[in-house]
Amino acid sequence: MTRENHRPHGAHEAAQASDDAPGSRAAEGVARTAGTAVVTGAGSGIGRAVALTLADAGWTVVLAGRRRGSLEQTAQLAGGAATRCVPADVTDPAAVTALFDSVREHEGRLDLLFNNAGTFGPAVPLADLSFEDWRAVVDVNLHGAFLCAQAAFRLMKDQQPRGGRIINNGSVSAHAPRPGSTAYTATKHAMTGLTKSLSLDGRAYDVACGQIDIGNAATEMTAAMSQGVPQADGNRAPEPTMNADDVARTVLHMASLPLEANVQFATVLATKMPYIGRG
Image (cartoon, rainbow, N blue to C red; front, top):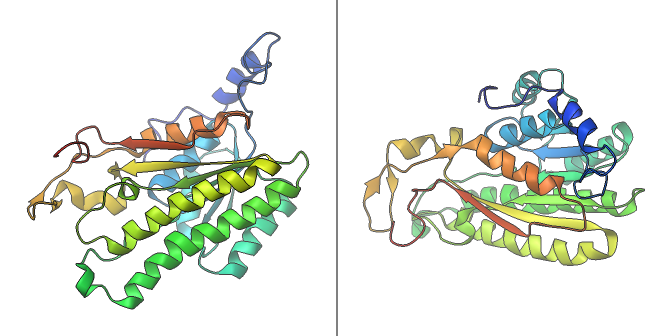
């Protein structure tokens, strides 16, 4: 992950000053100003790309993840932007509670959760998937997403001014599975249900929730795609990928909307990946 595609920190402030002039779209309430964001899985991949893009846009970003060293690397890449590292295992209810309690204490409020932490698990046929491997994927992708969403929801509905936004990281697997992806695909379908329920329950408290379904972003987790991955017809073939920064810019757009507007579902994928049609 490099910094070439990120706007230098400070450019946001100049742009915002212009946008806030009388008669501007921001002054009319069309765009949401930056606030405090929590990004889970912020130590690598999509989480790191989103955290850096939010930081460049003027957000205060709380970087959450299991490994402090990786989080600190993300903070270093953010330069002088406002970031704070909070090591946390999203599968641990006590750790998640501590994470969001720290946001209340240090930042005072929460405007955005990018619910991103996830794992693929082993790519094996259903008959060969152990219960332990199944449970490990469910613990991170579903239980972890639920715990973080619940903690963020509680904070957002009680803060003043109340409200905020939760963006869940889904997957194109929420629509079309890959071979040997039972646990991952099941949890991403469950994420869609979580997103819909959060959207409905959040209406009374000005909490908006959307989901971004991502296909073939170039990260550490998808590095093998250039060497060939199993296809539905039983063959193996390399697949195109896209820059994770393109995903991050989509998340920034979703996050920048006023709470009166919401991107319920967005799909961002490598244009030529085998997804639409027959490949």
